[in-house]
Length: 440
Ligand SMILES: Nc1nc2c(ncn2[C@@H]2O[C@H](COP(=O)(O)OP(=O)(O)OP(=O)(O)O)[C@@H](O)[C@H]2O)c(=O)[nH]1
Ligand SMILES: [Mg+2]
Image 1 (cartoon, rainbow, N blue to C red):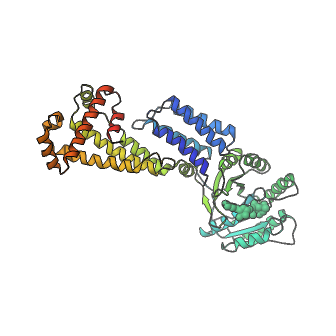
Image 2 (tube, rainbow, N blue to C red):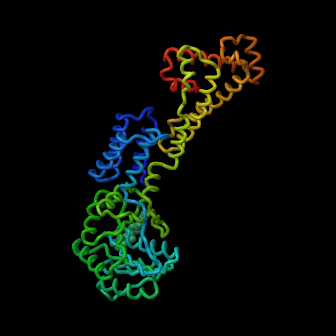
Image 3 (cartoon, rainbow, N blue to C red):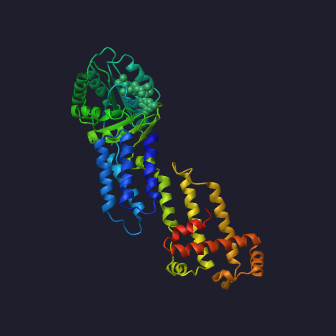
């Protein structure tokens, strides 16, 4: 669902998470990527700019709260702002003790009839007594279509094939169901001789039945047109909520955002398929979370935090003066292990795979295990001054750790490499150095 939007957003997040420092330059780059992604996903340009500028302003001005890294903070700002764009939380509120009336609006083919049946099913399952009114007198076959769809839902259908006025049918249907139902859903026409006529008819239907909610059904695949369409309906009859359909197919998703911004109404449900059960209650935070890969992302951010290599001051000094001990190395290896598992998380994130060579990673982790056991078999003096390890000591350490002499020599040569590197970098970028030691 919404693959390109998802990929674009996740690539932006990847850039954030992957950069060593999140400074103004990185934020601005990510914002540019975001703008491009949103616009490509059919989000209205003005809205795309507004949102991204807001994210940028907050990302650059707000200080991360204690214990939260700048990366986490920027990702969470992005998450919040996108969710806000989609309207707040809260779905359609129906009261079982009343007769709730819903009028479905939308242009032809948007999915009104299908969605009417889906809603009937959704609420029938939740204990509502549902009546459906077939008030589309324009399209031949519309009534039949609705009756067939609704027949499997446990709801009842009202129709009057002799009546030509949809307003009269809507009114009569409501009246008929008032005694026995607590939810009446009125399906209307989407086709008309002209758009003005359609809007006028909707206005009349709404004026007569006085619904608790008018729901605008928009086709999630139509993109930018969504905005004007939603606006036109909204001006004729205030839209109380939106259902975006066809988000299962080639939809770019921006239309959902547009319709919601044009009307100020919330998206209540999304349609994710042609079957009667393909209806999901919509939650902006969950939706955006899914787009950003937030489930995995949360785990990722945690790993990032854990994997931040803590550079011990004493150790850093030791490195700068060339006094690197095996114990220091051991601490680094521990950090490497965290980094190793971070990479595993990364692998599971869409867009990240390929960036990680799993074989290399396993190899590095295995080596660290070997090194650890060797270091544990050294005496304190040997750990502090590995240079002391001569041939006979080397044999003893190998025997004690159950590793080969070759392994011990490998560790010693890594130690030497690291010490040399430490000297040249003067401990400036110890973290990066430590990563290099991880065997990559
Ligand atoms: N893939 C997919 N198809 C859908 C979805 N919702 C509706 N459709 C399909 O879209 C087409 C039009 O749906 P209808 O429910 O007839 O649309 P309508 O708004 O009632 O159309 P009119 O009555 O002509 O105004 C049908 O083929 C539906 O099966 C959805 O969420 N996903
Ligand atoms: Mg229809």
